[in-house]
Amino acid sequence: MLELQSASLTLLGNFNPFIISPDWLKATGIWEAKDLHMSLGSTGGVGVQFHGDGTDWRVTAERLVITSMNCDCGSLAEKILDALPHTPMVAVVFHFVFQAPLDAADTVFSAIRRAIEPASGAELLRWGTVFHRDDARIDVAFVTGTQGTTVSSSHRRATRTTRVAKDAVKNFSNDKRQASELVSQMIRGARP
Image (tube, rainbow, N blue to C red; front, top):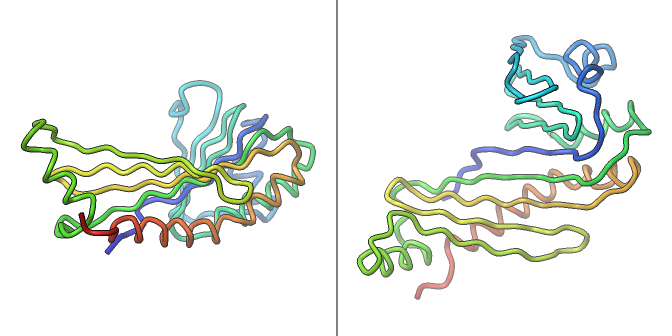
């Protein structure tokens, strides 16, 4: 019923966008793409953005973002942290976006939307919640309208050291699975 549209990992800390490049990733054996494309000037400041083989990278002085549907972003981040063990870290954030098909009308959120739209004239219904599970803050946002339903789940873990960040990135695959299960439960939901 739900389809994962995007999965990303963000390392918040101090990074050198002149070091983390396609050439450096290849030389360290972390990542290599056959169809590499650079996006010059797309970071809005000092930074670099590139993509290849279904994996997107964005590196600025404050963050490193890896987005991919076909590789384990946590494993890539762990290798980077191994190669740069003294990088000052602030947090690790995973972000997963799910899309429900247009015909998924029999959900608790669709019923709420049908009840609200006639009275308010609202074109979109937005809803969100925040909770904590273990060491992660989880933000779930739901948006539904005439073009479908999107649910995003962000998992944030505070980190102060590279060692703590390495432990956090190991949760990527498990958090992706848990996010899918959570969002599926929410979409099915109890009927009003």
